[in-house]
Length: 308
Ligand code: ATP
Image (cartoon, rainbow, N blue to C red; front, top):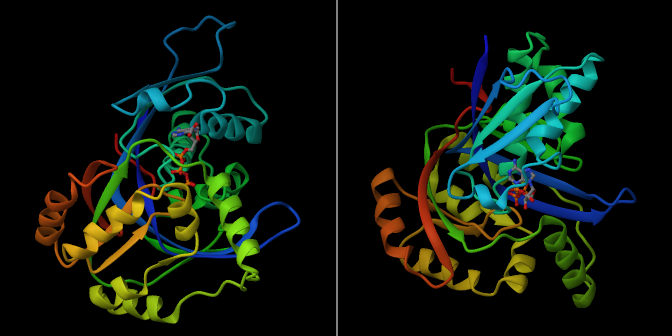
């Protein structure tokens, strides 16, 4: 096979409970991930340039958001392909092409998604035949959100979010995402969360999964799910980007069953009663100040999957 394309979803956090800062610099988390139908595509192809002095891993990015993504060794897809090659102890070559639709630095784990897709694509292109468990291990070394992009569906992550257990869900949930202008740096938002807690004299709680959330997912109860959504990073994201409060308020006002900042933001996520209500809601909030564009999506969807 000379080229493999993998489709990989964005995630929204249905619950993000942030515990104390650990000695290794990470926070203890309970992170309920939910994969939604907003996809990047990563193609790994045999290099056109067979010159042995050319870089072994080429990278290109296409789409409106391409200018915001590094096209060098810092790209998470390149890092993932290199980690996979290193694991085999042999040198491999590939040209990677990312078709970017997931917001960049938007709290929807787009970079992690591309890393997961590159692992699956290169495993196939290079004929390595590594099982999913091995790819999951490599994924966890690349970043906390990468294993979930391989797994997809709905899952609870503990530790720094990388220890995953799939969750039982019923039905399909419909979402609207309000994309903001410019991103928010994930480390900066965690830092602000710590600072706000310190300022208020509040100790970080031990994170625990919400039983109400688990029940709502199991029963496919969209209203209960809307009530149970929570994100401990939201106050920090709002402190750094106050305009997000308007976006969230507009969504609630127009009938969203739940409204929250996605992960570290600045994307805001709104839960709707049906696909039709999601489209209506999207049209109603698209002109709110600070909102660059809106997209609708549904979940859960599978993780990184070979598309051709
Ligand atoms: P998370 O939700 O996991 O905290 P995020 O969605 O907020 O992440 P990403 O879009 O994953 O943020 O990217 C964060 C930064 O990583 C970007 O600003 C960019 O500089 C860098 N980056 C590296 N590789 C990629 C990639 N393939 N796609 C997007 N960003 C990338």
